[in-house]
Length: 399
Image 1 (tube, rainbow, N blue to C red):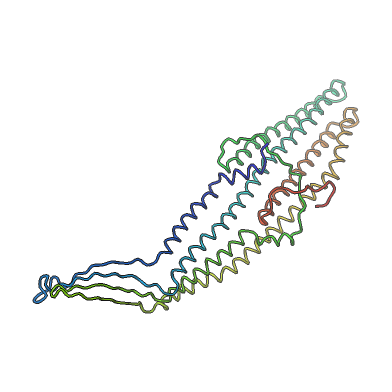
Image 2 (image 1 turned 45 degrees about the vertical axis):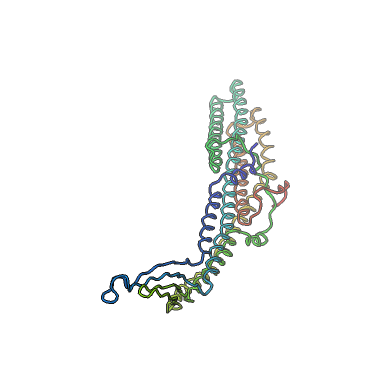
């Protein structure tokens, strides 16, 4: 039997969105290695006074210079580049975890859709079975002359509708299975059914206690890495305020007297601080925005958590009440109605209405359980808790 753990394992092994982060990390590591390189040494050869006039004509007055030049970086630019590149690599882990949780939540939702389709087929079969009993009872009454033929025809039509509902459920199950298998690239799902009980709803803490777990949510954790990246960007911008020194040393040979001389030069651009000031202000402004963005995201996540928590509690309560208070009475009513119909005490219309109500209540219970499970998946995505249900709520207990 295919389980939710099996689906999770296939997502972790095969989904390209998770494999993509490995390639992105290699790209960022290459950029980090490039950022860690010091300015290149530049070797040069220059020839002067080779095409002069008078005393400088010809090669006698030529001057040949061999030089070596580079840039002496100041202000911690190298360390700032390294820190900025490494902070982008570190942020990948949080992004991958966020994407992984989103994929697991989507997997759980599609798995639940398969489970729901299976349960709807079971409900359709339950309806078919009770309609068949009605058809048999109507045929007996018709043969006994206790009811008109319309009663038998109506019962047969109700049975046909129930069979149509089952056929629709089987098609929905096939589509749901294919939709689940598509997550890991299978066009022909290798499983016929899945295991699980949509009515197994675990106990959960109140919304205030669960809100304390939101700090583990990758959508908030990414702001920690975003702050590191922002701080690294500020330091990188500040380092531009300190001008670099361009230096050059060389050896010059004078052709006329075969004399040799050492040469050297140092130059520094002016106005570096003024040119760097806009970049510093921009980086500091982006860093300041992160606190506001994190506060807004925190409020959004808390609102989503509270809404999902409320849906879960309402759905779990509805499931428990329907199971404990409504269905037992309906089951007894169904048996009594079938007996009364066979005895001629009630009409087929009364029996059909009760059977329809019985199926409707069971569908209502299933829909409430599915809605609660969807809310639970969202709660688990937000808090990072396990997607598998814990101890089911005992019968009669209030969730």
